[in-house]
Each structure stands twice: as C-alpha cells, then as structure tokens.
Length: 359
Image 1 (spheres, rainbow, N blue to C red):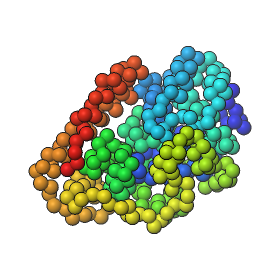
Image 2 (image 1 turned 60 degrees about the horizontal axis):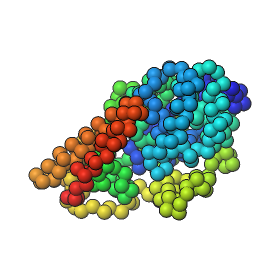
Image 3 (image 1 turned 180 degrees about the horizontal axis):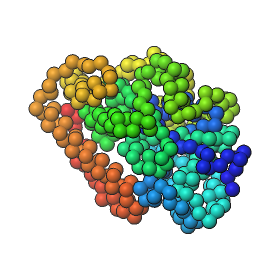
Image 4 (image 1 turned 120 degrees about the vertical axis):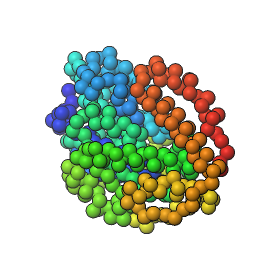
C-alpha cells in the first residue's frame, strides 16, 4: 500500500550514525538530515528491541506485526528515547504494514520511519538515516539486517566527551574514570570495525566537523551517496515542535541543555571550551586510561604520571562493573521479551555495588 509519491520500500536505503554519546552523533544526524529525500527521525531504540529476535529477511505475518507495533510503542529506554516524539499515526502505520499477507522485518522498520513526522515531511524519500550510540555495540547485527547499509562513526576528544558525560550522568557510574573507560571501549570498537569493513564504515572526527562543517558534511554525503540539495525550512521539524512533545518544564529545560545547540549553527569556536570539574589527580588518571586509544585516533598525546596503586585498583574495579553492564546489555537485547522482564527484575539491585564514593 505504501506509495509516498510512488516510492517503493525496496528503493529506500537505511544507513546509520554510530559513536559514543556526546560525540556529535545528533549534530551529524541533524545536518545530514537536511538533505532532500533523507528521513532522519529523533533517537529511538525500537530496532534493537527486535534485532536479535528475528532473522533479517524474516517475513512477518499480521499477528507478528501487531506484537511488534504494540511492543515498540511501549518501549521507553530514556527520557527522550521513545517513539512518541515521532508523531506517528499508529492506525495508518498498521494498515500499511498489513497491506499484504506478510512483510519483511527490514521493510516494517522502514515503514515506521516513513510514517513519522520527519518521514511524512520528506518528499519522495530514498534514504533513512538512523542514529543511536548503542548501535555501536550492534554494528555486526545491523550490518546483517541490510547488507547495503553504511555507517558513519563519529568520535570526539576524550576530555570534552568525558566532561559532557559526567555533567549529564550518562553512564552506569558517574565517575570520570568510568566515562574514560567507556570512551575507550566505544572508540576501539569504531577502529576495529573501520579496519574490518572500510567500505561500510567511514570514521569522522567531531573536531573536524565543527571546524570545517561544509567540507566534512560533503565527505559524509559522498560516502552515503546523499544529495547536497537541502530541504526548505518548512520541511524540517523545528526545535519548538520537539519541545511541544515534552510534558514538563523540567524535561524541556533538560532537552534544551543537552540538545539545544544542535538546532543552531555549528559553533566552530566551542571545541575544548568545556569547564573541567575534575581534580589534578583525576585528570592524570583519565589521561592514563585514554592515552593509547587517543593515540590511535590521531589526537596529540598528553603527559601524565602512572597512577598510584589505589587509583589502579579502582580502575580494575570499574572495569569489572563495565563488564557486568556489558553482560546485562548483551543478555537483555539478545533475549526474548519474557527473559528481558526477568533480567530487569534480577539485575535491578546491581546498583548497590557500583554506587561507590568518588576517588
């Protein structure tokens, strides 16, 4: 039934932006999404909710479609990570998904994107651009979902990233060493993927994007084969539209603080200007943790001293916690929904083991 000015689902590509949160993923999505024929919806994890449960080419019957749609609209993994922001006509989406006896899993994902406000405002869409930092962990499975998909991996200098993640408390443990370990983990994954699949993944440095936006956006467009022709202002949902979907003043203020800059012109003078809240001892240990990955990414090295025994023991403890978090993440997304409910219940008390005083 989908026609969208005679566009066929098979002709709509789906590509991804990956990288650790607070590294410029939202900014890059916003800018590339300004291109005509590109649909770039706000962040959601609904793909991950079924990514490991169904085979990429699985054809879904009407009962499975109902289960999928019911489940994804209940999913809310974060304050701003849910489908209510997408303004989807659920009845229309369900009707289009059931226009035939079965539909491919990947095509159902496309329909969800195309029926959102961004999709409906895009004339003759030929590409869906999706981003979510956790996708970085699921690169290989997303690659199987559609062999034609490509990825842009964006990374940012560790101090700016860690300061931002610490400010917004974005990790399981809000401590600079834990943020540093996560920064290393995600960016080592990007480096590994880029080495294995250079034709599928293009790496981009946030600082390059911020200092030379036009040049680097064109590099990304060329890699994804995106037209440089941009949408009109009326075709791009505004910041005000997104804020209207948030119910409280507190949510709106938090959203503006986290994402507000994304809706303004790229600030080329903001690099390295974040206020540092850490002690000299903490900074030294952060440099120690990130030094090797930092060098691989091509950043300038920073001098540091080897941390004392207590600091190194604390890092080991945080690595154990990170392994535990990774295990929970893996078990959760690779299990069916009944097991997931059990995981939520079983792992809920785990926070008592990580709520330790800062060192």
